[in-house]
Image (cartoon, rainbow, N blue to C red; front, side, top):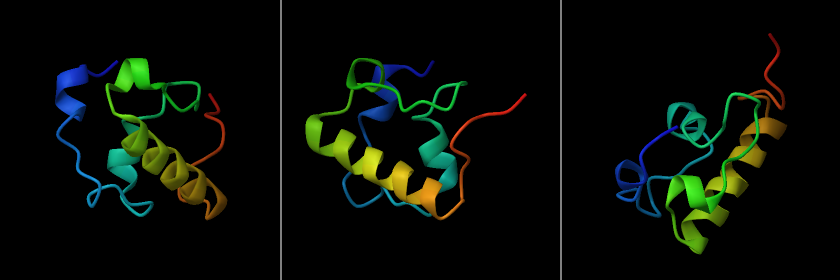
Length: 68
């Protein structure tokens, strides 16, 4: 897991569905989106992250499930 303090400095403009490396920080090893308790983001940032992850999944930039 990531530390809460390291993810709080993300601004609204930096979250984008094309930034796969940033979005992978918010997905756990099962492929689920991590909750606000683990990420430490506020509600607006969490909604932006969630929308970006779902958009990237639909465009097949990141997988829906992690296969082993």
